[in-house]
Every structure is written in structure tokens, then in C-alpha cells.
Length: 54
Image (cartoon, rainbow, N blue to C red; front, side, top):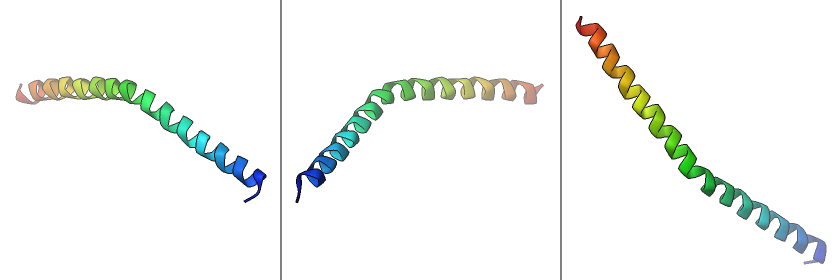
């Protein structure tokens, strides 16, 4: 394996690691957003039930 191929392989590995780290950092934000959406849907569902009862 020549040096150019070794460097390319190393760069790909580092890019993958950077992408993984970025995704890991996004997880808490995504969880928070998902919780907001879920609670909003629960609230909307409650309002729809009130409307359909009356």
C-alpha cells in the first residue's frame, strides 16, 4: 500500500469519526424536540376529544 492510499484511508476514517461525533452531539437536541412534538400532539389530542364530546 502506498503512502497516498494510506493518507486517503486515514482521512476517510477521520471524517467518519467526526460525523459520528457530530451525530452524538445532536442526540440530546433531537430528544428534546421529539418530547416537545409528543407533548404538543398529546395536547392536541385532548382538545380534539373535548371538541368531539360537545
